[in-house]
Image (cartoon, rainbow, N blue to C red; front, side):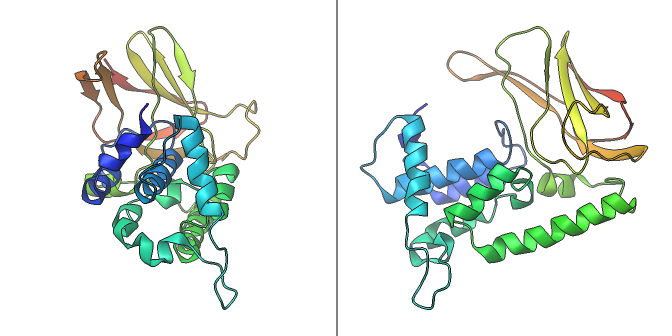
Length: 250
């Protein structure tokens, strides 16, 4: 609501926030990148003042209009520059592997020239190898996953529910061939591995896939203060085609 207040967050605190496994991420991991891009822009431009939507667009335009190549003709990336040193540790806490699940997000990442190609290329390799193992059936999902590993590697995503009643949604992007649908109804959250073809995406036809999850529900009052919290803890489950599992009762 008030982007200018991002200037009040020092790099040390922002690094801690972005790296936290308990960070509430609205929508998907890519929204964290958009927030950091805005935070850096506001830090570099103390006088910048616009409404929230406009200033987000301004931050994107700024990085895209920086000099694209150096004297040797190589592409320049902001995080490789001297000005970026105060922000490096913060960006190293981004979960880049979960920011390339949608083609539009990936196009933005590359076009912004903020994150160096060397950071992205290593992620591309590991993600492609992971997909090949999943496709061949060698990798059916996490097994005996420690909470430490879950906290470091999990895909953080969230949603705001403004009212009670039934709510059903999925997070967009490619999720390694899984179409996971979340349903909230009667104070219960459930997760379904959909196998219907109503979603025009590549889906895994393996009879079973394992997933690990932690569902946390938070309720706030009008002053944005926490008044209720419930969590499932880290759980692991095997889902067959079209199978549904209850993940949290409130």
